Image (cartoon, rainbow, N blue to C red):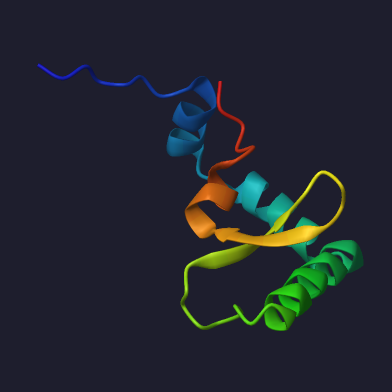
Length: 84
């Protein structure tokens, strides 16, 4: 018998109440000039490294030193995602 993982309180709340507040915040956040500039920077780096839009499964990953390096999408996106 497989154990069922219990949802967090916040995920239960959003399941009942919808995500209007969160969606509204995210919409404003991602429309800000700072975020647009940051996304443009990342896209530029992807193009420079030849991985933008070609489906190779690579992302430009940030290093602690401030540089960037190519890395698998799954590895890059799994890091620092707020696990308990």
